[in-house]
Length: 247
Image 1 (cartoon, helix red, strand yellow):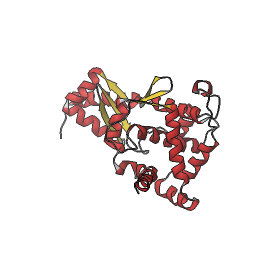
Image 2 (tube, one colour; image 1 turned 45 degrees about the vertical axis):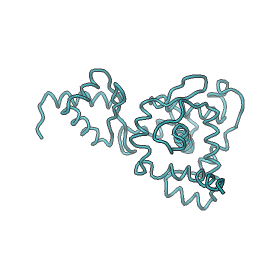
Image 3 (cartoon, rainbow, N blue to C red; image 1 turned 90 degrees about the vertical axis):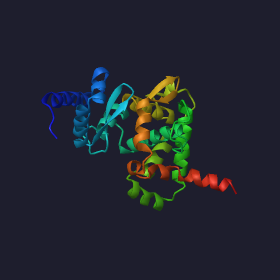
Image 4 (cartoon, one colour; image 1 turned 45 degrees about the horizontal axis):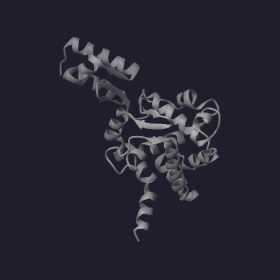
């Protein structure tokens, strides 16, 4: 298919801004949505980089599809910007788990297609992570080792890391950045997600999902080909407990 030169140039300029900033807004986003040629070209550019363009209201976001995308944030960057010099991969594994659990809290353990909550508190978030950790601990070491190979998640490391964090009761304001508490770690995860416009703090220790996250969840997260069955695994014990309770 042949494209006019000015359309190619305009598409490249918009894609360039997307690649640099991760988002375009206003007239630029509108051009992406209404100019079919520009829309097609930008999506082709993104596809070559293993990424997708998502329209969220009046914005267009560039989202890495897999870890192979050059737009995927590296573990080293996460450690340097959010977790500190003494962090290791176990902190990142736990951060991923806390993120999955947070979103699951809004989507009724991923049983609903739409959020069922407007916000959750840090305390509820910690409680939800505690429950997932307890479900992981129900597997013996041999099972966990097998499951680690299947899902590429270090489940035993996640359990160990979470249990080394002190479960303090003082306010998170006093803890953030100064203790190794679970609430403090949750605050770190919240700051990481907020950096990429995935959550917002709407009150004291109250977290809400952004529209961007809702679009991402609706388009990707519920699909097994993207989550690799991790959601089913993490919440499988919850289903078993409900079945047991019915007898």
